[in-house]
Image 1 (tube, one colour):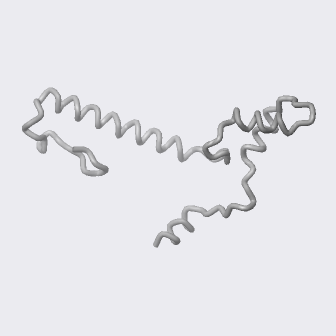
Image 2 (cartoon, rainbow, N blue to C red; image 1 turned 30 degrees about the horizontal axis):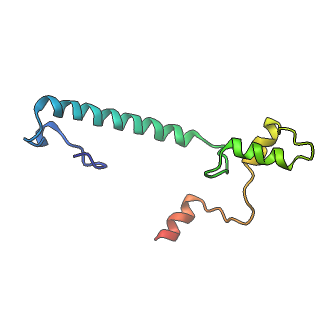
Image 3 (cartoon, rainbow, N blue to C red; image 1 turned 30 degrees about the vertical axis):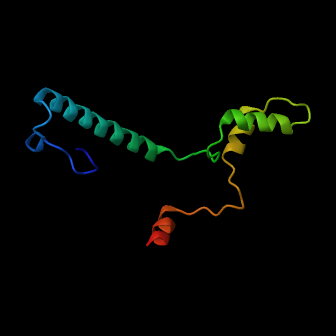
Length: 103
């Protein structure tokens, strides 16, 4: 019923769904869109992303602690810097490069 920009409306409702349930569905889909828009705008505000990929901060802290000769827990500053250091072997593409490559 609700795929991308193809929004379902009361006029297009299937007759197999009772009116009360369909109203609830429309309210739910509208809420989903609002939440999606809010999440999208918040995601666009992020400018200092970590480069850990699927790894967690806890795993990074553990690895840094194991590298330390005294097995001391790493400072927050060290974790922060290490979590934003890119792998020099990986080539980073901006969105324009990705679009151009896909064309």
